Image 1 (cartoon, rainbow, N blue to C red):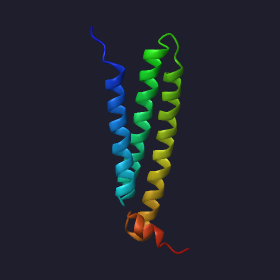
Image 2: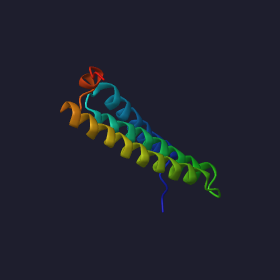
Image 3: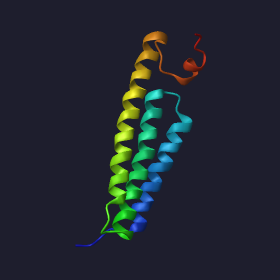
Image 4: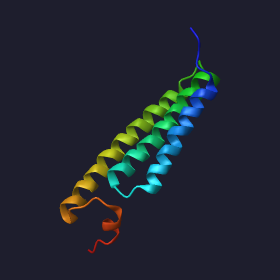
Length: 104
């Protein structure tokens, strides 16, 4: 069975990372910004797994870091969705520009 070269995996990871950065900096919708952050975290996970496989195949450090990041990302998504729902209920919009004009 042929293995995928590390450079190909890193190329996919880099593409995911910069797609997430582009979405984070150009979008004003909070849900698309949240999805962009998830793309960035997934690209980091791909890097951890790839370097774990190619550099230290006998250890599971990269897998443990990946599981930890997935857990943190799930908690972050749950809190962010709760904030987005609360913002929508109070302002009928999830646009970042509207959130900047909130008055307490």
